[in-house]
Image (tube, rainbow, N blue to C red; front, side, top):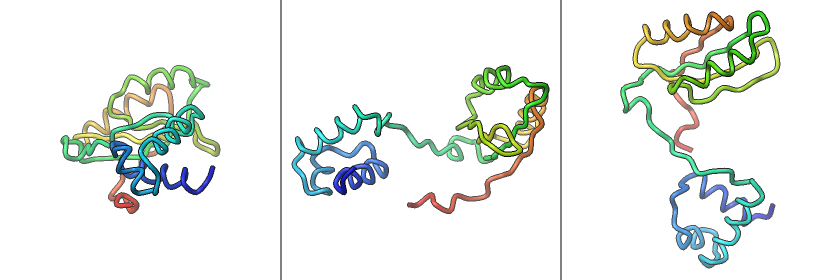
Amino acid sequence: MDFINERILEELKKDSRISMSELGRRVHLSAPAVRERVRHLEEQQIIRNYTLDINTKALGFPIEALIEATIKNNRYIDFKEHIQTFTNVDFCYRISGETCFLLKAHFQSFPDVEQFIDDLQRYAHTKSNFIFSDICEDK
């Protein structure tokens, strides 16, 4: 990984919709040269996909929570299948430590949070942490 590829990744991280000509201008390469580098980064699976950052608060989901889930009765597979059915879960990671999974979800109301937690109780003990702000949001 050279310096130019690092700069390409930084720019794409800020705005993955940037044109190849603008990206080239920012990293001091021609559009065809930068396009070839991006294609190579994709082939190497360094760039896996391009995503959309949705403002869930603007969509009416003002509550965000990080939820720790510690599996009950060895129900790992059941939990993994169940958690994938929720559209309000942004991520769910299997982690090390006392907790088995860490997930982030967004909600319209606290009764929705309560229902979500109640639903998970079949599979896991939970601990909820509510997100007040994102310190790194404007990076």
